[in-house]
Amino acid sequence: MAFPSSANPHPDGPTLGPRLGAQERAVIDALGQRIGRVVTREELLARVRWSPLTARRLDAHIQRIREVLGPEAVETVPRRGWIMRRPLAA
Image 1 (spheres, rainbow, N blue to C red):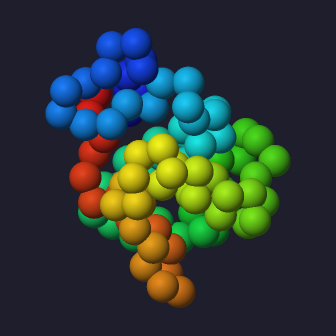
Image 2 (cartoon, helix red, strand yellow):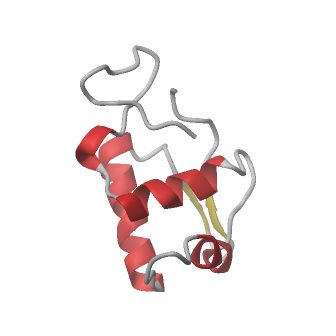
């Protein structure tokens, strides 16, 4: 998944630019690879292994992603995980 520059925002959707960190981008990438499907906490923790990611830190990253991209960017599926319904603008 490409992360557009905030200096050249895509007219059809939000951009990430420098507003999100590497771990948040990795979470978005993991969710983006499974558009329309639930991704569990365990799957995200396993997929973003390159950094020390804890369950609480993952929750904070999801919250930050929603702050930047909007609350509809990542939907919580109670007791199952998270789902990204549509890809981000490239």
